[in-house]
Length: 375
Ligand SMILES: N[C@@H](CCC(=O)N[C@@H](CS)C(=O)NCC(=O)O)C(=O)O
Image 1: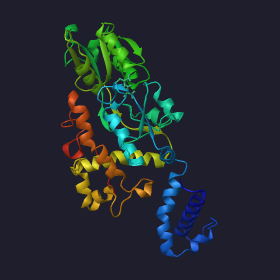
Image 2: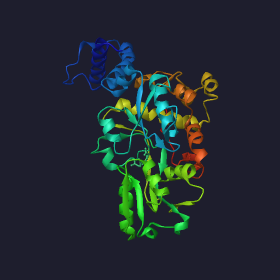
Image 3: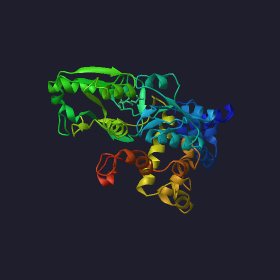
Image 4: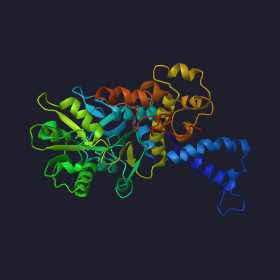
């Protein structure tokens, strides 16, 4: 823990540096530290920035606590699934682990908190969770009046519908074809709003049944209580793989999703130090992927790395300590969890979701996955 004295000293030094850079006629009463020799002031700048930005941030709280409270679904196939032994698997679970590896040096230091869609934002507001990795869509209202901030999109999704082939639906069906249908979905989601709006626009009259959990949605769908289920396309694919009964054939449509569902880390608004820690964990995973550096070879790569990889590894010119993280924070992320492709492929390939040709390909391959430079 940083002492009060260090924080105050840091604050004074920052004021000193700012005042100096604004000219000596500044109205700010610059403390005597402005007279410090240039080298001392320059060295202190780094420390001062770290101490001040992290002060009062969740970053401090999480580091003091020693565990990350990460909000997940727990029943989102391939994204976050609570297993019989209590462990949680999936791409969202791995992003929780990645943040723990960066912030705490230990990918295992995660307390997973399973939340329904309607519980999730309250859990952030009350501080029950530090971050959501819960197939959560970045929207304007959530980003503003709901009080959330959003990190880099980790999965570009879109809403689709799923129905039985025996009911006359096919991959080329459209929303207008669901006229008269009973449609099941989850409450507290973008999904329920999108389908109501899309059906209205397509002139289809539907009966919308809302459930708190996806398990209830699929139990009802399988039993014939609804003709259609609708949610993020990735979730439909996962449920079809896991739950389609031998005597039913389910089909997903329309080919072009009815909405954009950018899914990614979500946390309370106005905490820049925490946001930076979460966001740059994801960016580091994307950048290391661009260099082809994986968990298997990151130790060797970091041993001789230069330039951008060198900086991310924690070598000369590293930027992690300047944001309140250990110098080797991102080395640990790759080592303990993996780069973006590793995490994507190991969780999503088994349900038939591939990066190639999708919006989740890297930007050099025609996709949208992109990170700013580590500079
Ligand atoms: N991305 C949408 C939908 C998220 C959502 O909650 N989807 C459901 C269907 S995949 C879900 O996660 N269910 C899992 C559960 O019941 O725990 C949103 O942010 O509102």
